[in-house]
Length: 168
Image (cartoon, rainbow, N blue to C red; front, side, top):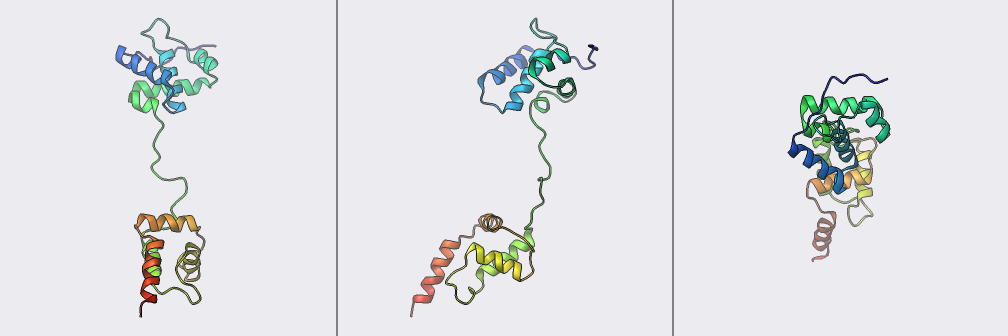
C-alpha cells in the first residue's frame, strides 16, 4: 500500500554529485552514507530516482517512517541536517566534577602528601576526595582527565617535590 509523499525531493546537479561522492567514497560515517543513498533514490528529478518510501525501505532494510523522516528533514531544513546526525546539547551522563570540585582537587594536589607516601598518586587523590566528603564516588580516570584539563602534571610536580625534599 503506497501513499503519495508530502515532501518531494528534487536535487540539483551539484547536490546530486555531492551525494554520489559521499555514498561512493566510503570515508563518511555509515549513517551519512545511508542518508545520501536515501536522498538519491528519492530524487524526483532524476531518471533513476523517484522511488517510493516503501520501495527505498525495502531496498535498504529500513522502516518507511525513517525514509519519510529523512525526506522531510531534507525538504524543510536542507542537506546538512538530512545527512548528519543531530548534535547532542548535553552529554548522556552529567559530569561528576564541576569547577568547584576541580578547584578543591587542585588544592589537594598542592597540599602535603599523606604520611607514609612519597608523592600524590591518582588513587591517593581519589581517596582524599572521598574522605574529605567532596565527592562520594569517582574513578581515577575522571581525576586524571580533570588534572589534564587544568594542565597539572603529577609526574613533574612529584619530581620537583622530591628534589626539594632531598636538598640539604
